[in-house]
Image (tube, rainbow, N blue to C red; front, side, top):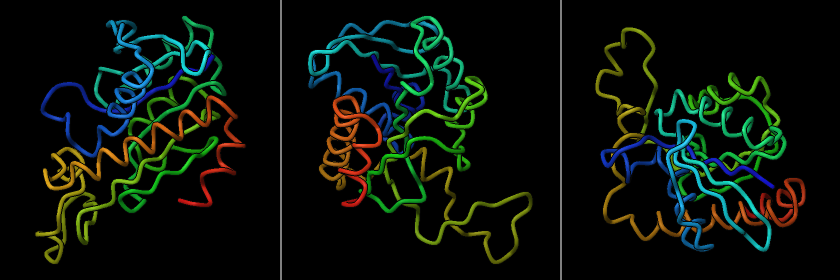
Length: 202
């Protein structure tokens, strides 16, 4: 049994934003496998159901991105799921839009959702499905007081929390489907095999 976590922020304001790709993928897996019994539990929206004949757990943490780890830790503890049997689906700003890649473990890379999960689990050996959302043109993350030459640089945070353009909706749907496919390969074949099958082509 796997715990599949999709990262995002709750509420309609963020529903169509790049930062909510994890939620989109959970919703797609729910649709495909008719897992519709979501209920609020342990700080997230939780459901369980069969995917390819095996019971798995779906979770969307609902305490905002930087607190995601609390719901993950509580759910994993209640259902006795080890970190190595957790898959976290998240947006990846360091990938160009459309790239999907599986990673078996590692650090948080500046992603606040991953940071929170690592802190709460006291472990980093959970799998990740990294969903490339790209960056705004020439975006630079400002630290402290900005220099005069980057006063007008696009803001990465605003980019992540704003809606994808309506014109991109079909591309975003395709990306969501491919990320859900990647999760299904992990559940069927394991993380290492899924990496060998999918990462070379992405």
